[in-house]
Length: 237
Length: 237
DNA sequence: CCATCTTTTTGATCTTGATCAAGGTCGACC
DNA sequence: GGTCGACCTTGATCAAGATCAAAAAGATGG
Image (cartoon, rainbow over all chains, first blue to last red; front, side, top):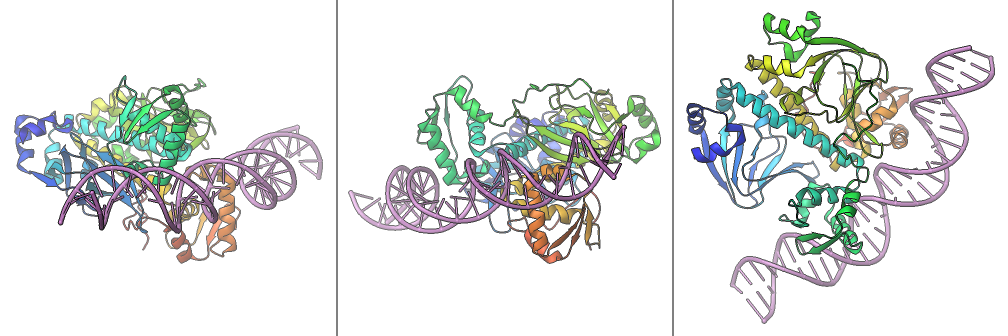
Protein backbone atom coordinates (compact mmCIF):
# COMPACT_ATOMS: atom_id res chain seq x y z
CA UNK A 1 0.00 0.00 0.00
CA UNK A 2 2.88 2.32 0.76
CA UNK A 3 3.53 2.55 -2.95
CA UNK A 4 0.03 3.73 -3.62
CA UNK A 5 0.40 6.34 -0.91
CA UNK A 6 3.64 7.64 -2.34
CA UNK A 7 1.80 8.49 -5.48
CA UNK A 8 -0.63 10.86 -3.83
CA UNK A 9 0.27 14.51 -4.05
CA UNK A 10 -0.93 15.22 -0.57
CA UNK A 11 1.37 12.67 0.94
CA UNK A 12 4.37 13.39 -1.17
CA UNK A 13 6.14 15.46 1.43
CA UNK A 14 5.91 13.07 4.32
CA UNK A 15 8.90 11.31 5.78
CA UNK A 16 9.05 7.53 5.70
CA UNK A 17 8.23 7.49 9.34
CA UNK A 18 5.19 9.70 8.88
CA UNK A 19 3.98 7.72 5.91
CA UNK A 20 4.34 4.61 7.98
CA UNK A 21 2.14 6.12 10.64
CA UNK A 22 -0.45 7.26 8.16
CA UNK A 23 -0.55 3.85 6.67
CA UNK A 24 -1.28 2.28 10.01
CA UNK A 25 -4.62 4.04 10.09
CA UNK A 26 -5.40 3.73 6.45
CA UNK A 27 -7.75 1.11 5.09
CA UNK A 28 -8.05 -0.13 1.59
CA UNK A 29 -11.57 -0.54 0.38
CA UNK A 30 -13.56 -1.42 -2.64
CA UNK A 31 -16.92 -0.33 -3.94
CA UNK A 32 -19.08 -1.87 -6.58
CA UNK A 33 -20.68 0.22 -9.24
CA UNK A 34 -23.41 2.39 -7.82
CA UNK A 35 -22.41 1.81 -4.22
CA UNK A 36 -22.64 4.72 -1.85
CA UNK A 37 -19.52 5.63 0.07
CA UNK A 38 -21.06 8.25 2.28
CA UNK A 39 -24.13 10.36 2.48
CA UNK A 40 -24.50 14.07 2.66
CA UNK A 41 -24.79 14.84 6.36
CA UNK A 42 -22.81 11.86 7.63
CA UNK A 43 -20.12 12.68 10.17
CA UNK A 44 -16.89 13.12 8.25
CA UNK A 45 -14.50 10.74 9.93
CA UNK A 46 -12.46 9.77 6.91
CA UNK A 47 -11.06 11.21 3.78
CA UNK A 48 -10.14 9.27 0.69
CA UNK A 49 -7.64 8.60 -2.03
CA UNK A 50 -8.90 6.94 -5.20
CA UNK A 51 -6.72 4.18 -6.58
CA UNK A 52 -8.89 3.09 -9.47
CA UNK A 53 -12.32 3.79 -10.83
CA UNK A 54 -14.31 6.98 -10.50
CA UNK A 55 -16.81 8.37 -8.07
CA UNK A 56 -19.28 11.12 -8.29
CA UNK A 57 -19.82 13.66 -5.56
CA UNK A 58 -23.30 15.06 -5.65
CA UNK A 59 -25.72 17.17 -3.71
CA UNK A 60 -29.22 15.99 -2.96
CA UNK A 61 -32.04 18.45 -2.46
CA UNK A 62 -35.05 17.61 -0.32
CA UNK A 63 -37.25 16.86 -3.29
CA UNK A 64 -34.75 14.28 -4.49
CA UNK A 65 -33.19 16.30 -7.28
CA UNK A 66 -29.49 15.80 -7.54
CA UNK A 67 -26.60 17.84 -8.82
CA UNK A 68 -23.21 16.33 -9.57
CA UNK A 69 -20.59 18.58 -8.07
CA UNK A 70 -17.50 16.68 -9.08
CA UNK A 71 -16.19 13.51 -10.65
CA UNK A 72 -13.22 12.05 -8.80
CA UNK A 73 -10.76 9.76 -10.52
CA UNK A 74 -7.61 7.75 -9.78
CA UNK A 75 -4.89 9.61 -7.93
CA UNK A 76 -7.26 12.18 -6.54
CA UNK A 77 -8.15 12.73 -2.92
CA UNK A 78 -11.41 14.10 -1.63
CA UNK A 79 -13.07 15.24 1.56
CA UNK A 80 -9.74 16.26 3.09
CA UNK A 81 -10.99 19.75 3.71
CA UNK A 82 -13.34 18.53 6.39
CA UNK A 83 -10.46 17.43 8.54
CA UNK A 84 -10.17 20.96 9.88
CA UNK A 85 -13.66 21.50 11.08
CA UNK A 86 -14.86 20.56 14.50
CA UNK A 87 -17.99 18.49 13.93
CA UNK A 88 -17.62 18.13 10.23
CA UNK A 89 -20.22 16.42 8.12
CA UNK A 90 -19.90 15.56 4.48
CA UNK A 91 -21.53 18.29 2.41
CA UNK A 92 -22.18 15.90 -0.49
CA UNK A 93 -22.94 12.27 -1.22
CA UNK A 94 -20.28 10.10 -2.81
CA UNK A 95 -21.05 7.07 -4.91
CA UNK A 96 -19.11 4.84 -7.26
CA UNK A 97 -19.65 5.29 -10.97
CA UNK A 98 -17.87 2.02 -11.60
CA UNK A 99 -15.99 -0.48 -9.47
CA UNK A 100 -13.70 1.60 -7.29
CA UNK A 101 -10.67 0.91 -5.15
CA UNK A 102 -9.74 3.49 -2.60
CA UNK A 103 -7.87 4.15 0.57
CA UNK A 104 -9.59 5.65 3.54
CA UNK A 105 -7.70 7.78 6.04
CA UNK A 106 -8.71 8.58 9.54
CA UNK A 107 -9.07 12.34 9.73
CA UNK A 108 -8.16 12.59 13.42
CA UNK A 109 -4.94 10.66 13.05
CA UNK A 110 -4.02 12.44 9.94
CA UNK A 111 -4.62 15.88 11.38
CA UNK A 112 -2.56 14.85 14.36
CA UNK A 113 0.31 13.91 12.17
CA UNK A 114 -0.12 17.02 10.08
CA UNK A 115 0.99 19.12 12.98
CA UNK A 116 4.44 17.86 12.32
CA UNK A 117 4.49 18.65 8.65
CA UNK A 118 3.97 22.25 7.76
CA UNK A 119 5.04 21.32 4.28
CA UNK A 120 2.06 19.06 3.92
CA UNK A 121 -0.17 21.77 5.33
CA UNK A 122 1.01 24.00 2.54
CA UNK A 123 0.25 21.32 0.00
CA UNK A 124 -3.21 20.94 1.35
CA UNK A 125 -3.82 24.65 1.41
CA UNK A 126 -2.70 24.80 -2.19
CA UNK A 127 -5.14 22.08 -3.13
CA UNK A 128 -7.98 23.75 -1.27
CA UNK A 129 -7.14 27.03 -2.87
CA UNK A 130 -7.35 25.56 -6.34
CA UNK A 131 -10.57 23.86 -5.53
CA UNK A 132 -11.96 27.13 -4.29
CA UNK A 133 -11.01 28.74 -7.54
CA UNK A 134 -12.67 25.93 -9.45
CA UNK A 135 -15.92 26.43 -7.61
CA UNK A 136 -15.88 30.16 -8.20
CA UNK A 137 -15.40 29.46 -11.86
CA UNK A 138 -18.32 27.09 -11.74
CA UNK A 139 -20.53 29.66 -10.08
CA UNK A 140 -19.67 32.10 -12.78
CA UNK A 141 -20.52 29.52 -15.40
CA UNK A 142 -23.89 28.86 -13.87
CA UNK A 143 -24.72 32.51 -13.40
CA UNK A 144 -23.38 34.04 -16.54
CA UNK A 145 -23.28 31.41 -19.24
CA UNK A 146 -25.83 29.48 -21.22
CA UNK A 147 -26.21 25.74 -21.22
CA UNK A 148 -24.59 25.45 -24.66
CA UNK A 149 -21.69 27.55 -23.52
CA UNK A 150 -21.17 25.29 -20.54
CA UNK A 151 -21.27 22.22 -22.71
CA UNK A 152 -18.83 23.72 -25.19
CA UNK A 153 -16.53 24.58 -22.30
CA UNK A 154 -16.77 21.06 -21.06
CA UNK A 155 -15.88 19.61 -24.43
CA UNK A 156 -12.91 21.92 -24.77
CA UNK A 157 -11.69 21.04 -21.32
CA UNK A 158 -11.80 17.36 -22.13
CA UNK A 159 -10.14 17.63 -25.49
CA UNK A 160 -6.78 15.85 -25.41
CA UNK A 161 -3.93 18.12 -26.45
CA UNK A 162 -3.53 18.37 -30.21
CA UNK A 163 -6.56 16.22 -30.82
CA UNK A 164 -10.00 17.08 -32.04
CA UNK A 165 -12.01 14.25 -30.59
CA UNK A 166 -13.18 13.38 -27.10
CA UNK A 167 -14.43 10.16 -25.66
CA UNK A 168 -17.24 11.06 -23.28
CA UNK A 169 -16.65 8.20 -20.91
CA UNK A 170 -19.56 9.05 -18.65
CA UNK A 171 -23.24 8.49 -19.04
CA UNK A 172 -24.86 11.49 -20.66
CA UNK A 173 -27.13 11.92 -17.69
CA UNK A 174 -24.14 12.31 -15.40
CA UNK A 175 -22.53 14.86 -17.66
CA UNK A 176 -25.80 16.72 -17.86
CA UNK A 177 -26.09 16.90 -14.11
CA UNK A 178 -22.46 17.94 -13.79
CA UNK A 179 -23.25 20.84 -16.13
CA UNK A 180 -26.61 21.57 -14.53
CA UNK A 181 -28.49 20.78 -17.69
CA UNK A 182 -31.38 18.36 -18.14
CA UNK A 183 -30.55 15.31 -20.24
CA UNK A 184 -33.14 16.29 -22.82
CA UNK A 185 -31.59 19.69 -23.20
CA UNK A 186 -28.09 18.27 -23.46
CA UNK A 187 -29.29 16.02 -26.21
CA UNK A 188 -30.75 18.96 -28.10
CA UNK A 189 -27.60 21.00 -27.67
CA UNK A 190 -25.52 18.20 -29.13
CA UNK A 191 -27.87 18.01 -32.02
CA UNK A 192 -27.79 21.71 -32.65
CA UNK A 193 -24.01 21.88 -32.60
CA UNK A 194 -24.08 18.89 -34.87
CA UNK A 195 -26.35 20.44 -37.47
CA UNK A 196 -24.32 23.63 -37.32
CA UNK A 197 -21.32 21.57 -38.29
CA UNK A 198 -19.40 22.38 -35.17
CA UNK A 199 -19.16 18.87 -33.80
CA UNK A 200 -19.95 15.39 -35.00
CA UNK A 201 -21.39 12.93 -32.54
CA UNK A 202 -20.43 9.31 -33.06
CA UNK A 203 -21.88 7.44 -30.13
CA UNK A 204 -20.03 8.65 -27.10
CA UNK A 205 -17.21 9.96 -29.21
CA UNK A 206 -17.40 13.59 -30.20
CA UNK A 207 -15.38 15.05 -33.00
CA UNK A 208 -14.74 18.73 -33.10
CA UNK A 209 -15.12 19.94 -36.66
CA UNK A 210 -14.88 23.64 -36.03
CA UNK A 211 -12.67 24.47 -33.09
CA UNK A 212 -12.95 28.23 -33.51
CA UNK A 213 -16.70 27.96 -33.57
CA UNK A 214 -16.77 25.83 -30.47
CA UNK A 215 -14.52 28.24 -28.63
CA UNK A 216 -16.78 31.07 -29.60
CA UNK A 217 -19.78 29.33 -28.16
CA UNK A 218 -17.85 28.49 -25.01
CA UNK A 219 -16.95 32.13 -24.67
CA UNK A 220 -20.46 33.46 -24.98
CA UNK A 221 -20.49 35.59 -21.90
CA UNK A 222 -17.47 33.66 -20.84
CA UNK A 223 -14.28 34.82 -19.17
CA UNK A 224 -11.28 34.56 -21.40
CA UNK A 225 -9.70 34.16 -18.02
CA UNK A 226 -6.06 35.06 -18.60
CA UNK A 227 -6.13 38.70 -17.63
CA UNK A 228 -7.58 40.02 -20.83
CA UNK A 229 -9.19 42.67 -18.74
CA UNK A 230 -8.65 46.35 -18.93
CA UNK A 231 -6.84 47.32 -15.81
CA UNK A 232 -7.78 50.80 -14.85
CA UNK A 233 -4.45 51.26 -13.17
CA UNK A 234 -5.75 52.60 -9.90
CA UNK A 235 -4.74 49.67 -7.79
CA UNK A 236 -3.71 50.73 -4.33
CA UNK A 237 -0.61 49.12 -2.96
CA UNK B 1 -2.56 48.67 14.24
CA UNK B 2 -1.56 45.74 16.38
CA UNK B 3 -4.91 46.00 18.10
CA UNK B 4 -6.76 45.66 14.86
CA UNK B 5 -4.68 42.63 13.98
CA UNK B 6 -5.39 40.94 17.28
CA UNK B 7 -9.03 40.97 16.38
CA UNK B 8 -8.64 38.92 13.24
CA UNK B 9 -9.38 35.24 13.59
CA UNK B 10 -6.58 34.26 11.29
CA UNK B 11 -4.01 36.03 13.38
CA UNK B 12 -5.33 35.02 16.74
CA UNK B 13 -2.83 32.25 17.29
CA UNK B 14 0.30 34.15 16.55
CA UNK B 15 2.87 35.02 19.18
CA UNK B 16 3.63 38.65 19.92
CA UNK B 17 6.83 38.29 18.04
CA UNK B 18 5.11 36.84 15.01
CA UNK B 19 2.42 39.46 15.07
CA UNK B 20 5.10 42.06 15.23
CA UNK B 21 6.68 40.64 12.15
CA UNK B 22 3.42 40.47 10.30
CA UNK B 23 2.73 44.03 11.16
CA UNK B 24 6.00 45.15 9.71
CA UNK B 25 4.81 44.11 6.26
CA UNK B 26 1.24 45.16 6.68
CA UNK B 27 -0.10 48.40 5.29
CA UNK B 28 -3.21 50.20 6.25
CA UNK B 29 -5.20 51.53 3.37
CA UNK B 30 -8.38 53.27 2.55
CA UNK B 31 -10.74 53.11 -0.39
CA UNK B 32 -13.48 55.45 -1.39
CA UNK B 33 -16.85 54.19 -2.40
CA UNK B 34 -16.69 52.43 -5.73
CA UNK B 35 -12.92 52.24 -5.80
CA UNK B 36 -11.38 49.08 -7.15
CA UNK B 37 -8.93 47.24 -4.93
CA UNK B 38 -7.82 44.68 -7.47
CA UNK B 39 -8.91 43.27 -10.74
CA UNK B 40 -9.62 39.72 -11.70
CA UNK B 41 -6.38 38.44 -13.21
CA UNK B 42 -4.03 40.71 -11.29
CA UNK B 43 -1.09 38.97 -9.64
CA UNK B 44 -2.13 38.18 -6.08
CA UNK B 45 0.60 39.73 -3.99
CA UNK B 46 -1.50 40.71 -0.99
CA UNK B 47 -4.36 39.54 1.05
CA UNK B 48 -6.60 41.70 3.14
CA UNK B 49 -8.34 42.27 6.42
CA UNK B 50 -11.30 44.62 6.44
CA UNK B 51 -11.42 47.06 9.33
CA UNK B 52 -14.49 49.01 8.34
CA UNK B 53 -16.85 49.26 5.41
CA UNK B 54 -17.73 46.54 2.96
CA UNK B 55 -16.41 45.35 -0.36
CA UNK B 56 -17.86 43.22 -3.01
CA UNK B 57 -15.98 40.45 -4.74
CA UNK B 58 -17.29 39.85 -8.19
CA UNK B 59 -16.56 38.04 -11.39
CA UNK B 60 -16.57 39.78 -14.72
CA UNK B 61 -17.37 37.94 -17.91
CA UNK B 62 -15.99 39.06 -21.23
CA UNK B 63 -19.21 40.72 -22.27
CA UNK B 64 -19.11 42.84 -19.16
CA UNK B 65 -21.75 41.02 -17.17
CA UNK B 66 -20.87 40.75 -13.53
CA UNK B 67 -21.75 38.37 -10.75
CA UNK B 68 -21.21 39.23 -7.11
CA UNK B 69 -19.57 36.28 -5.44
CA UNK B 70 -19.29 37.62 -1.94
CA UNK B 71 -19.75 40.65 0.25
CA UNK B 72 -16.92 41.15 2.70
CA UNK B 73 -17.39 43.13 5.88
CA UNK B 74 -15.42 44.29 8.92
CA UNK B 75 -13.35 41.64 10.65
CA UNK B 76 -13.23 39.42 7.61
CA UNK B 77 -10.20 38.51 5.58
CA UNK B 78 -10.15 37.66 1.92
CA UNK B 79 -7.83 36.41 -0.79
CA UNK B 80 -5.71 34.50 1.73
CA UNK B 81 -6.21 31.29 -0.15
CA UNK B 82 -4.07 32.52 -3.00
CA UNK B 83 -1.05 32.66 -0.77
CA UNK B 84 -0.45 28.98 -1.41
CA UNK B 85 -0.36 29.00 -5.15
CA UNK B 86 2.74 29.63 -7.16
CA UNK B 87 1.80 32.34 -9.63
CA UNK B 88 -1.52 33.19 -8.13
CA UNK B 89 -3.83 35.72 -9.69
CA UNK B 90 -6.99 37.06 -8.16
CA UNK B 91 -9.93 35.09 -9.47
CA UNK B 92 -12.32 37.99 -8.84
CA UNK B 93 -12.45 41.75 -8.78
CA UNK B 94 -12.77 43.56 -5.46
CA UNK B 95 -14.31 46.97 -5.09
CA UNK B 96 -15.53 49.09 -2.22
CA UNK B 97 -19.26 49.37 -1.66
CA UNK B 98 -18.68 52.26 0.69
CA UNK B 99 -15.64 53.93 2.20
CA UNK B 100 -13.43 51.11 3.38
CA UNK B 101 -10.45 50.81 5.68
CA UNK B 102 -8.36 47.72 5.39
CA UNK B 103 -5.03 46.20 6.08
CA UNK B 104 -3.03 44.63 3.34
CA UNK B 105 -0.60 41.79 4.03
CA UNK B 106 2.23 40.67 1.90
CA UNK B 107 1.51 37.10 0.95
CA UNK B 108 5.17 36.09 0.64
CA UNK B 109 6.09 37.34 4.07
CA UNK B 110 3.04 35.91 5.63
CA UNK B 111 3.50 32.50 4.09
CA UNK B 112 7.08 32.59 5.28
CA UNK B 113 6.00 33.26 8.78
CA UNK B 114 3.26 30.68 8.55
CA UNK B 115 5.84 27.97 8.39
CA UNK B 116 6.42 28.56 12.04
CA UNK B 117 2.82 28.37 13.08
CA UNK B 118 1.09 25.14 12.30
CA UNK B 119 -1.69 26.36 14.51
CA UNK B 120 -2.37 29.22 12.15
CA UNK B 121 -2.21 26.83 9.23
CA UNK B 122 -4.98 24.88 10.85
CA UNK B 123 -7.03 28.01 11.31
CA UNK B 124 -6.61 28.88 7.69
CA UNK B 125 -7.49 25.42 6.54
CA UNK B 126 -10.60 25.59 8.66
CA UNK B 127 -11.57 28.87 7.07
CA UNK B 128 -10.93 27.56 3.57
CA UNK B 129 -12.91 24.47 4.34
CA UNK B 130 -15.93 26.46 5.40
CA UNK B 131 -15.66 28.66 2.40
CA UNK B 132 -15.54 25.59 0.20
CA UNK B 133 -18.68 24.34 1.81
CA UNK B 134 -20.32 27.71 1.28
CA UNK B 135 -19.56 27.63 -2.41
CA UNK B 136 -20.88 24.11 -2.79
CA UNK B 137 -24.06 25.26 -1.12
CA UNK B 138 -24.22 28.14 -3.52
CA UNK B 139 -23.80 25.88 -6.51
CA UNK B 140 -26.62 23.76 -5.28
CA UNK B 141 -28.77 26.84 -4.86
CA UNK B 142 -28.10 27.96 -8.38
CA UNK B 143 -28.66 24.54 -9.90
CA UNK B 144 -31.56 23.27 -7.91
CA UNK B 145 -33.51 26.23 -6.57
CA UNK B 146 -35.64 28.94 -8.05
CA UNK B 147 -34.95 32.63 -7.81
CA UNK B 148 -37.68 33.11 -5.21
CA UNK B 149 -36.28 30.30 -3.16
CA UNK B 150 -32.85 31.88 -3.21
CA UNK B 151 -34.26 35.20 -2.18
CA UNK B 152 -36.25 33.63 0.64
CA UNK B 153 -33.09 31.87 1.79
CA UNK B 154 -31.24 35.12 1.73
CA UNK B 155 -33.86 36.85 3.82
CA UNK B 156 -33.87 34.06 6.36
CA UNK B 157 -30.10 34.08 6.58
CA UNK B 158 -30.11 37.80 7.29
CA UNK B 159 -32.88 37.72 9.84
CA UNK B 160 -31.51 38.71 13.23
CA UNK B 161 -32.18 36.11 15.91
CA UNK B 162 -35.65 36.39 17.40
CA UNK B 163 -36.61 39.17 15.05
CA UNK B 164 -38.88 39.24 12.07
CA UNK B 165 -37.44 42.16 10.17
CA UNK B 166 -34.31 42.71 8.13
CA UNK B 167 -32.63 45.86 7.01
CA UNK B 168 -31.35 45.21 3.50
CA UNK B 169 -28.36 47.48 3.76
CA UNK B 170 -27.19 46.91 0.21
CA UNK B 171 -28.46 48.29 -3.04
CA UNK B 172 -31.04 45.98 -4.53
CA UNK B 173 -28.96 45.58 -7.63
CA UNK B 174 -26.09 44.22 -5.59
CA UNK B 175 -28.30 41.79 -3.76
CA UNK B 176 -29.77 40.72 -7.07
CA UNK B 177 -26.36 40.00 -8.52
CA UNK B 178 -25.31 38.18 -5.37
CA UNK B 179 -28.33 35.92 -5.84
CA UNK B 180 -27.88 35.66 -9.60
CA UNK B 181 -31.18 37.35 -10.27
CA UNK B 182 -31.87 40.36 -12.45
CA UNK B 183 -32.96 43.47 -10.54
CA UNK B 184 -36.29 43.50 -12.33
CA UNK B 185 -36.97 39.95 -11.33
CA UNK B 186 -35.96 40.60 -7.74
CA UNK B 187 -38.38 43.46 -7.64
CA UNK B 188 -41.16 41.26 -8.90
CA UNK B 189 -40.37 38.53 -6.43
CA UNK B 190 -40.58 40.99 -3.58
CA UNK B 191 -43.89 42.15 -4.85
CA UNK B 192 -45.25 38.68 -5.19
CA UNK B 193 -44.22 37.68 -1.68
CA UNK B 194 -45.73 40.93 -0.58
CA UNK B 195 -49.11 40.34 -2.16
CA UNK B 196 -49.09 36.81 -0.81
CA UNK B 197 -48.76 38.31 2.64
CA UNK B 198 -45.48 36.62 3.37
CA UNK B 199 -43.40 39.72 3.72
CA UNK B 200 -43.99 43.45 3.89
CA UNK B 201 -41.55 45.74 2.15
CA UNK B 202 -41.02 49.11 3.79
CA UNK B 203 -38.29 50.78 1.82
CA UNK B 204 -35.19 48.76 2.42
CA UNK B 205 -36.65 47.19 5.52
CA UNK B 206 -38.41 43.90 5.09
CA UNK B 207 -40.80 42.49 7.62
CA UNK B 208 -41.50 38.81 7.67
CA UNK B 209 -45.21 38.30 8.23
CA UNK B 210 -45.34 34.57 7.68
CA UNK B 211 -42.15 32.85 8.73
CA UNK B 212 -43.40 29.35 7.99
CA UNK B 213 -44.42 30.41 4.55
CA UNK B 214 -41.08 31.99 3.86
CA UNK B 215 -39.25 28.90 5.04
CA UNK B 216 -41.39 26.80 2.79
CA UNK B 217 -40.47 28.89 -0.22
CA UNK B 218 -36.83 28.79 0.76
CA UNK B 219 -37.02 25.02 0.90
CA UNK B 220 -38.57 24.54 -2.51
CA UNK B 221 -36.17 22.05 -3.94
CA UNK B 222 -33.87 23.07 -1.15
CA UNK B 223 -31.33 21.13 0.87
CA UNK B 224 -32.70 19.97 4.18
CA UNK B 225 -29.16 20.67 5.32
CA UNK B 226 -29.97 21.01 8.99
CA UNK B 227 -26.55 22.30 9.95
CA UNK B 228 -26.72 25.55 8.05
CA UNK B 229 -23.43 26.83 9.29
CA UNK B 230 -23.16 30.53 8.99
CA UNK B 231 -19.80 31.84 10.05
CA UNK B 232 -21.56 34.55 11.93
CA UNK B 233 -22.25 32.52 15.04
CA UNK B 234 -25.91 33.49 15.06
CA UNK B 235 -27.58 30.20 15.79
CA UNK B 236 -31.33 30.49 15.78
CA UNK B 237 -32.99 29.04 18.83
C1' DC C 1 -37.04 73.86 -4.32
C1' DC C 2 -35.69 72.58 -8.62
C1' DA C 3 -32.64 69.96 -11.92
C1' DT C 4 -30.23 65.94 -12.54
C1' DC C 5 -28.65 61.41 -11.77
C1' DT C 6 -29.07 57.00 -10.09
C1' DT C 7 -31.72 53.26 -8.56
C1' DT C 8 -36.06 50.80 -8.50
C1' DT C 9 -40.38 49.49 -10.27
C1' DT C 10 -43.69 48.35 -13.83
C1' DG C 11 -45.41 46.64 -18.16
C1' DA C 12 -45.08 43.98 -22.48
C1' DT C 13 -42.81 40.60 -24.81
C1' DC C 14 -39.36 37.03 -25.86
C1' DT C 15 -36.11 33.14 -24.98
C1' DT C 16 -34.09 29.52 -22.71
C1' DG C 17 -34.47 25.58 -20.86
C1' DA C 18 -37.82 22.50 -18.12
C1' DT C 19 -41.47 19.30 -18.30
C1' DC C 20 -44.26 15.54 -19.94
C1' DA C 21 -45.01 11.86 -22.86
C1' DA C 22 -43.69 8.74 -26.46
C1' DG C 23 -40.46 6.31 -29.18
C1' DG C 24 -35.75 4.46 -30.08
C1' DT C 25 -31.46 2.28 -29.05
C1' DC C 26 -28.39 -0.53 -26.84
C1' DG C 27 -26.56 -3.96 -23.94
C1' DA C 28 -27.33 -7.82 -20.58
C1' DC C 29 -29.10 -11.97 -19.79
C1' DC C 30 -31.94 -15.98 -20.31
C1' DG D 1 -32.35 -14.29 -31.03
C1' DG D 2 -35.72 -12.26 -28.21
C1' DT D 3 -37.01 -9.81 -24.05
C1' DC D 4 -36.23 -6.69 -20.51
C1' DG D 5 -34.70 -2.54 -18.57
C1' DA D 6 -31.82 1.43 -18.62
C1' DC D 7 -30.59 5.18 -21.16
C1' DC D 8 -31.00 8.46 -24.71
C1' DT D 9 -33.57 11.10 -28.15
C1' DT D 10 -37.53 13.55 -30.09
C1' DG D 11 -41.64 16.30 -30.14
C1' DA D 12 -45.04 19.41 -28.14
C1' DT D 13 -45.93 22.46 -24.67
C1' DC D 14 -45.05 25.36 -20.62
C1' DA D 15 -42.98 28.50 -17.33
C1' DA D 16 -39.34 31.05 -15.19
C1' DG D 17 -36.76 34.59 -15.87
C1' DA D 18 -34.48 37.78 -19.20
C1' DT D 19 -34.84 41.72 -21.97
C1' DC D 20 -36.30 46.24 -23.47
C1' DA D 21 -38.42 50.43 -22.71
C1' DA D 22 -40.32 53.72 -19.89
C1' DA D 23 -42.19 55.66 -15.68
C1' DA D 24 -41.52 56.47 -10.78
C1' DA D 25 -39.02 57.19 -6.77
C1' DG D 26 -35.10 58.51 -4.22
C1' DA D 27 -30.79 60.89 -3.77
C1' DT D 28 -27.60 64.90 -4.45
C1' DG D 29 -26.16 69.25 -5.16
C1' DG D 30 -26.83 74.05 -6.51
